[in-house]
Amino acid sequence: MAMQPDEVLAILRETGVIREGHFLLTSGMHSDRFLLLAQALQYPRHAERLCREMAEPFREAGVEVVVGPAVGGIILAYEVARALGARAIFAEKVEGGMALRRGFAIRPGERVLVVEDAISTGGSVRKVLEAIAPFGPEVVGVSALVDRTGGQVDFGVPTRAVLTLSIPAWSPEECPLCRAGVELVRPKG
Ligand SMILES: [Zn+2]
Image (cartoon, rainbow, N blue to C red; front, side):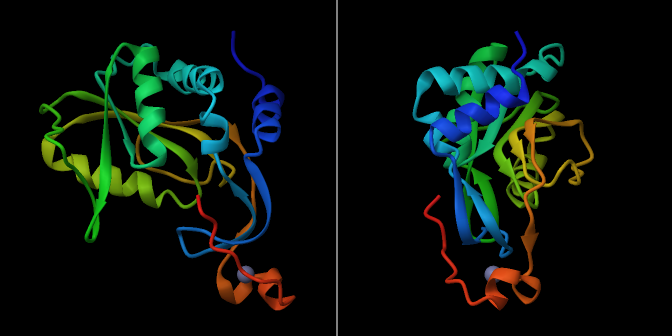
């Protein structure tokens, strides 16, 4: 049965995913909320449930490979792949972007679903897409656990999120928390 947004939020709250403060995001933007999704994914029963939900919109898409960005996307790729009967690989940070390592490869035309824990600017997803492009995959879509942009991001392929939130993010120049002198934290996420 499909999960209601309330159920998803309840899991995120209960497991301590949602942190409040003044955070420097990977994108360089500042925000008053940070999502530590690994907090929810440390429980296999939650990971399984949430990832089944991520898989659902792509159940008929013939997905053969699920790929996510390390580290956050490893468990997601694995669990989503399990739900879809596909295989799971991950891309890792390298100088200037991301790459498939460890002998991971994609056959030309293989049907790929890209997964991500939280989309804030979409930077990690774009790096994964760039990393796999040389293999000539057929990218069927992007599935995220949380879309922080309120659905504003466009990867040129169908993109779905289990939960869509509009969490504000500001450039350092525009950040009201900076202006108020609140200490900036680089979250260990
Ligand atoms: Zn700030």
